Length: 97
Picture 1 (cartoon, rainbow, N blue to C red):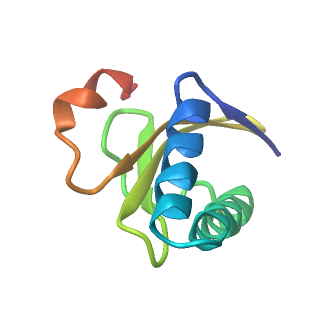
Picture 2 (tube, rainbow, N blue to C red; picture 1 turned 135 degrees about the vertical axis):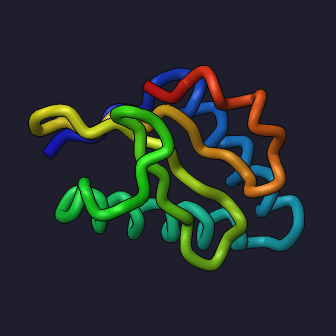
């Protein structure tokens, strides 16, 4: 299964890592590990999580108040959004498919 970060999700991931590293040394690394762990679970169970659009699903990111929105097509998972739980939905609503 391949994972593709659809822009601007690569920047969203880096922004979250930077934010947590600014809060405490190494916390950004823990955030990234939680992200990687969630992605590993997605690769094995892409249809397990709740639908938020016709083709889009959402999964929470473990210990951190973030979620990942994604679309699973054939053998590819497209990550369409990485956002904080309190983020205004207008920020990401158009990324649902």
